[in-house]
Image (cartoon, rainbow, N blue to C red; front, side):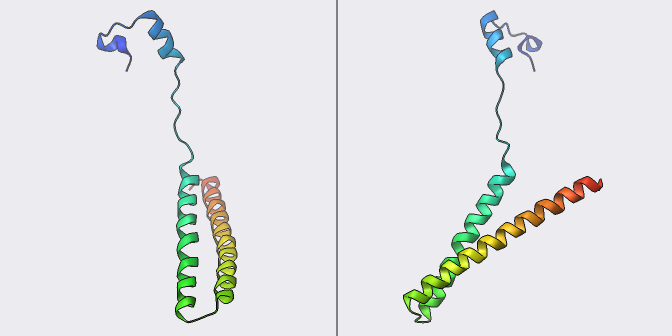
Length: 97
């Protein structure tokens, strides 16, 4: 509500500053959500895979190769999942449901 509606007197120079002020809000909520989910998945699964292979007495080259392969496969999987989710949401929005 405006200051005048509450009976508060505002000096002219402050009124000018208040009328020029625009609030900037964070609008990238979906992007941040996807990044958080991707990072948590991207860190958890390779660690679990490496821990499992280490526990099975696999050589370090096998653990490293499996970790890199999992990171690549996980990136592809998460990318396709994000794309399909966004495409489905867009299709749903366009259909008017």
